[in-house]
Image (cartoon, rainbow, N blue to C red; front, side):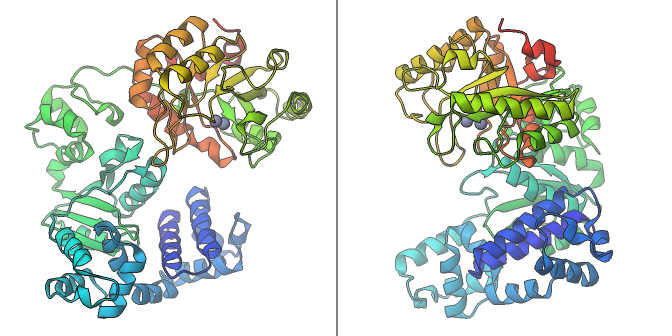
Length: 538
Ligand SMILES: [Zn+2]
Ligand SMILES: [Zn+2]
């Protein structure tokens, strides 16, 4: 058994524990264990067999017992039991239709039904209103939702990292390719899809329906199905005939705006054959947002990145020490890592005073002795105060090797005030990069009103770079804005804003977001060797 399906089973188990309102810590422990297993370079099944699996972080005796059962028997008995008891398929369908998990389980209990088909029958027979708490209005809503065509779109976008995990897991289990928004690295994914090639579609559709991630199939055709997860997220599977796989993959990857002008697409077994037949150069999926049939530029790649210029340590709200972060960055093959902890004005978490900055320098120097020739850089993520001044005095900033300037509080300031505030900060001669310029938190906080055109002008004049923040709920600048910045001549930095060793892995998200903005290696500051990064501002 491979690591990915083991992790998927633990995730499915965690989802059911949550539904059953078990101790939330238990569910979280299973989710964390699933993450660890997915990331583990060694075979977890072998570790289980040799009795060494508890060497992995976060795996205690309880989880070890489940893993042993899973490796020995191929399933977790309690998972099957919980599935019978909790009707996760009804919950998934219910969430997809807009019902809470609690409401779906009430329906399941009151009407003694377990499957989506039974729900449809009960609804059609008018039995829903006999469930306590369901009146004619709710019934009408459910009937209407059940009657709609299956629409493979969640009610709101899924964060890219979670979408990659979900869709990537399903694709790996079916030997399929990820498609949809995930393959284009969209910042918030709505179309979750996988495509595979098989002469006979039925066995693949059956395997799809039996995956631990898929609790209910809401639509099934000859070569296509839509399944929902326990969270109510719809995922589409397309099973192409092998001689048409390339065609199906391009269509399922999208976007519609990109694909439509290329239609009618010829039949092709793979993408490259399809593009050859069209007489169009192959296009990286990240660029397929608008009509384009030219030759794409050579885009920046994760392997071009020589260091990470925005990370945190235990000095502020990070989880790892300066040395641990440095060592992890070195193991990634980087040449440098800037530790940019917060300053006091950030408010919610600890921020560094001028005195802390001096004391942290000693710790950084010690880490550098151990890690040389790798370099941990003395950085800061300095808050921009409401009047545009920075949160540390100039003589302190002058000692530092990399200064990120950030707006944290006051994201809702009106456009002229916010723009002026940021402009002021960019004129400080020590600032090297503006962090997460639009300040959004995907699904939670909209973008701020900052006038980017104006910021580009000042950044260009001052030689300040703009960040492409790789935190999965930020991805800020986003692709379109990266493209605008680069067109204006501004340079970008691909950063993770890592708060842990694991967080350094978000570099891929940052780089792919930069690629969505057509970034080439020369436009990204941290593709350069240390001495040119450290050279003073242009
Ligand atoms: Zn920040
Ligand atoms: Zn930060």
